Amino acid sequence: DAGVIQSPRHEVTEMGQEVTLRCKPISGHDYLFWYRQTMMRGLELLIYFNNNVPIDDSGMPEDRFSAKMPNASFSTLKIQPSEPRDSAVYFCASSARQGKVGAITDTQYFGPGTRLTVL
Amino acid sequence: RKEVEQDPGPFNVPEGATVAFNCTYSNSASQSFFWYRQDCRKEPKLLMSVYSSGNEDGRFTAQLNRASQYISLLIRDSKLSDSATYLCVVIPSGGYNKLIFGAGTRLAVHP
Image (cartoon, rainbow over all chains, first blue to last red; front, side, top):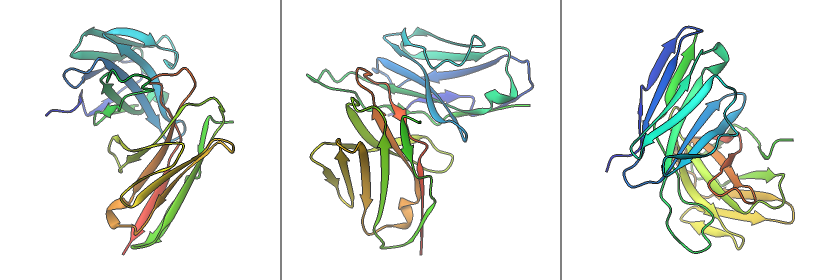
């Protein structure tokens, strides 16, 4: 079975350019998460969706970042304009509600990540 | 203070050694705990959940001490393939699906 798919795997761009990262979650999963990982701050949750609706975007650093999920099989994270401090690995993850009574959470499956470098 | 704190390591151990990592969390109302493993330049993967009574999965044992707010991971009989970064993960109270990651502890197992 295909896991979470992210594209591109690597992106090098110049400061001020628009960057769009893409994610295809595992089929049937109804939660989608965007994370950012840097040496300084570790792995941080940026935003997550449930059934294509944004639930919590409190981790989105600023207005330059936006995320959309137009359908159950596709999501984008956009940075406009990009800055050197946005350089990081961006992971997408998905999970499926197991429907267990009292379940605290469900296993999140991460994609391979997009390594973004902003010059 | 960070919500989840870990010793970054690295822990350099020979094959066959037993190694233990600790992690502390600041929110006493945190409700769920996990260990994730991340190989170099790869994505994180769930290693195991951590239950109040402690749990074991093969060579791996996880313990939770709610009173002291720390979580531990013990790896017995270390293998070269155990070399990775181990991330402590906490879900805060009311934070369904909102994983808070520690910075990770790096383990290097050598022959």
